[in-house]
Picture 1: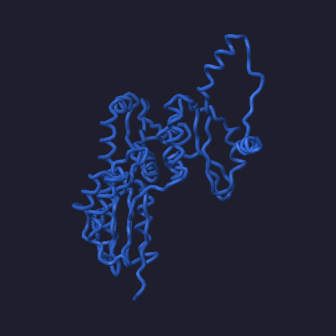
Picture 2 (picture 1 turned 60 degrees about the horizontal axis):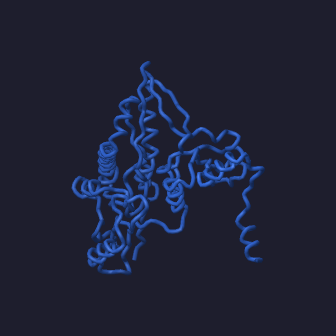
Picture 3 (picture 1 turned 90 degrees about the vertical axis):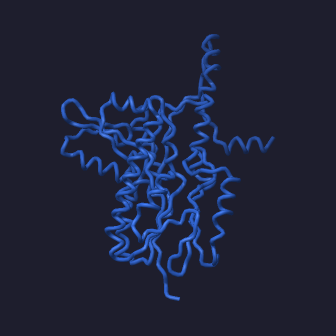
Length: 342
C-alpha cells in the first residue's frame, strides 16, 4: 500500500494565524489529507475602547494599557484575531452595559465566532478545493451546535465532517465525537458519562474496519494542570482564600521572560475563569525573582493570595492585644517526614 500522509491539528480556538498556517502546510508537507480535530471557536471577546480624542486603547496583557491611532486599528484587530480572540470596538459605558447582560454578551460572542468560521471555510474553498486536497474538520466540546451546522451545510465539497459518523479518506475511515465527558466549565458539548456512552454506542456502529479507523475523540486530559484551576476556584468560592493578583510568566528559549495572557497558553487557559480582586500588586521585582528560576521554554503562574481562613484568628489576636511574631511556610516533604517518624 502506498504511503498516506495526514497533517493533523486541533484546538486552535479561533486563532487566525494558526489556521492559515494549517492550510499553508499543504504545499509544504504535501499531505494527502488535512485533519482539524476539534475546538474551532475562540473563548474571549476583547474590547477595544474608542476615546473622545479619536484614539483607541486596549489591554493586551498583564493589565497594561496600549493606546493607538485610528489607522492602527486594523493591525490591532488582526493581532487580537491571531490570539484566537474576537474584538469589539466600543466605549467603556457601552461595554459595561454589555457585561451586565451576560447571556446577551455570550450570544454576541458566538455570532462573531460563527462569522470567523465562515471566513475559514472560504479559505478552505480558495486554497484547497482547486488543488483537490480533502480536509476533515470536526467540532470539539467548546464548539456549539451552530458551528456544527455551519460545517455540515456551508462548507465546500472537499470538507468532510465526522461528528457522530464515519467518513472515508483514502485507505482509512475516520470516526468523530466532539462531545466530551463533563468538565468543571460545562462546555457546550460536555456530557455526563452515561449520555456520552450512549452517544458513542449509537453512532460508532458505522465503523467497518477497526484496524484502519482513526478515532477523533475530543476527551479532556486527566491529571494535568487543567485540574488546578477548578480546585483554586473552589477555595475562592468557599472563602478559604482571596486572590489579590494573578499573572502568568513565560521564558523563551533565549531566556527572555514576559507576562502572558492565560488563554495564550493551553496549560493555563482555564485560569481565565478566576479573577483577581485587586490586580497590579505583583511587581516587576516579583516577576524578575520568579523568572530567574524558570527553565527556558517553560511557564508559571504567580499568585498573591490572602488566607481568609485566618481572618478570624487575626481579629481575635488584635482584640486581645496580641500579635503574630513570625510566620513561615514549612515545605510539605518536611512535614511528611516528621509525621512518618511519629
